[in-house]
Amino acid sequence: MIPEKQHVDFEQIYIAYFSRMKYFAQEYVLSDEDAENIVQDVFLELWERKEMLELPINIIAYLFTAIKNRCIDFLRRKILIRDIEDKLQEEYRLTLQVKYYSLEHFDLDILEEKSIEQILSKAIDALPEKCREIFIKNKIEGKKQKEIAAELNISVNTVETQMGIAYKKLKTELKDYFPLFLFLLYL
Image (cartoon, rainbow, N blue to C red):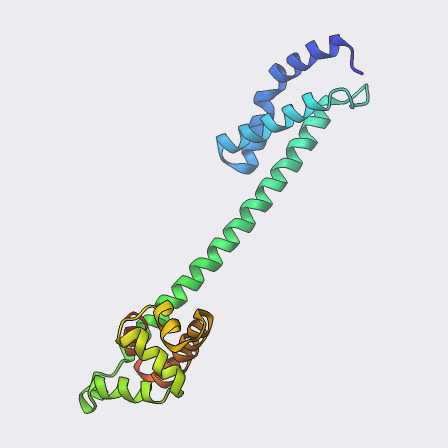
C-alpha cells in the first residue's frame, strides 16, 4: 500500500505533468478535447491503481507509455469508424449512380410502343397464381396483409413470403423498366 505521502505526490504529479501529457496526446489525436479526455483517463487509472503500483516507479515513463497506448487505441477506433463511413458512403454513391444510369437509360420510346398498363399487367400475369392473387389484393385492392391472410385462410407469414416472391419475380420481369418496378413497389 502506498503511504499517505504518496497521495500528496499524486496531486503534485497531476499538477506538474497534466499539461505536458495533454500536449503530447494532442500531437497525435489532434483534438484538444480528445487529448484532454485521454490524459484524464490515464490519471484516473493511475489514481485507481496507486495501491497496486510497484515502488519506486518512473512516473514519466509510466504516463508517456499509458498515454501512447491510449492514443493508439483512440486512433485505431477512429480509423475503423472512418473506414466504415467511407464504405457506407461508397455504397450510397454506387446506389445513386445505379439509379441515375437506370433513369438515364430508361427508354421512353418503349413506353410509347406499349402502354405502361400493358407492361405492368403482363408482368403481374406472369406471377404464379397464388402469388398474383395475394399481390393484387395487397397492391391493387389496397388490403392489409392481415386481411388477406384472414380472407384466404392462410398465415400472415405466408402472405409476406408470397409478396417477397412477387417482388423478386417482378424485379426480374421488369428489369428493362426499373422505374415501373419502383412504381409497383410503392403502390
